[in-house]
Image 1 (cartoon, rainbow, N blue to C red):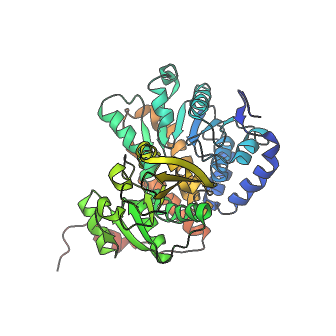
Image 2: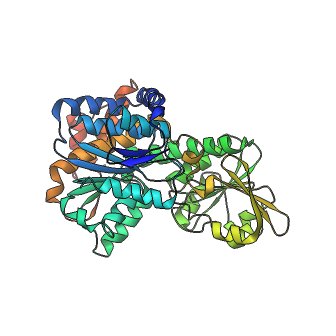
Image 3: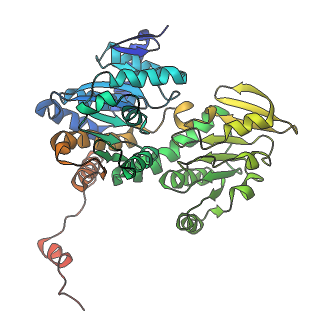
Length: 423
């Protein structure tokens, strides 16, 4: 039975030994974070800082937390999604590594927000968010913590959108760096990580054969590109829906079929939303879907699918497999919702591969160091990751892979920076 105190709220501390094994396994594929951790342990760049992180509680996140801790920070962690927590990882962080962690897989909304409150009770100096729930809480019900916070970071597209909206209204109270927008994050985490892990989650939940299926991908941002790439690689017939004409054109040129969701709804076998918006799949689409359709979301929040409309249209709902709720519609059709409409790659699988999160969390660690040094000089806005941090992560990753690249000569640098050399 889960208990709550200042040291954490986890499902079962007896799972800690298994958590340690899994955290150490993930570390094998995270050489960049390991190098940063070694330097942090020596230099202590985060000394006397309190960091509250609202992230998916996975083995990769655990390695980031250990890096921050070894850098001298006092760290507290809560989950950024009720279904993404790995209970054994949470147990290990509390019992073996002494990091207060507030996260239980499957927790209800009340418990979820209690855990966010617990993370803020540590009076953080830096926030580290994935979806901006922690920042939103600090700006509404917990304004008492704002006086201690000097800066923050944000991990995902949805969170960046929320924070830019907050800043545009003039209500953002401290500077935040959009780690999501680093090239070494969105090129790799969003494209290769989301692409692979989304299909992994759907496959684990359903054991579906992808070859020959009509796979509808809503949204062609970096996540959508990755999902479409992997679905096509598995033999799926990929269909992309978009509201952005340039992204839609790109999808066409990449070889995908592009149409409206209204058109796609009638022919799709598997639907995957990755828009970051609301009701990409709505009532009118649910009304015409094939019987047996699989509907999944890989965007941060479960609002991309109109679940209320699905409940309204259905005569009954039953759990037919773990992570599969089957809705029996009034006309006899059966629509299958995966993972309660939440992030399917974390609800039914293990999230991104560790090798991808290595770059994302290297950016988080180095940006935390940057904010510790410079946040007091920044105004309350949303900032991009400094280019030198982004490039450092790329260099460290290449080095860990044994890949060498060229460097410009003095003559080449002069040519590229001059205007007076022509034909």
